[in-house]
Amino acid sequence: FITMFCALYDPKTSNFRYSNAGHNPPILFPANARSCVQLEIGGIPVGMFPDAEFHSDEFILKQNDLVVMFTDGVIEASDNSNVQFGFDRLCDVVNNNHDSEPDELAQTILSEVNNHAGISSPSDDITIVILKKL
Image (cartoon, rainbow, N blue to C red; front, side, top):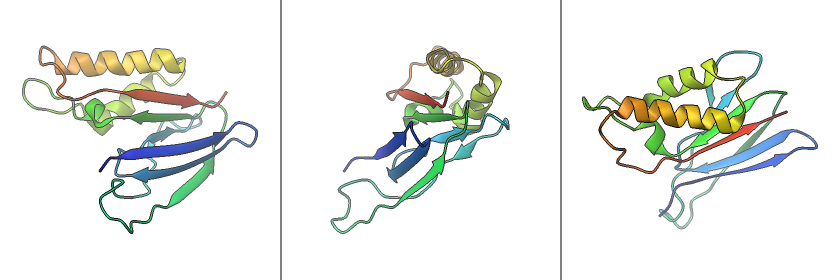
């Protein structure tokens, strides 16, 4: 089996349509409010059950909204006391750097994750993809 998140963004209509198969839910960061909303839709990993059904949802991205997609290595990165980086810390980092360009924001998140982990190297892959509506 495999987890995955799939999205289709239409730049003409600003429509963001997505489905999830057991992956971490991406996070929407609206530009007009320093908040974070998990794009939870449910779904089990692909290949677990032959008759599994997958649903989708959609919304309209507004100017300067961010969608942050990431692997579990980001939020599960642990320090020497086994404290995970976590969802709340990720939200704080993004909200504090919301006006950064997506590539800079991804580097900031990665730096914060590495700083949190300290001398302990991440035990999982770390991938970050950021979509910003201009």
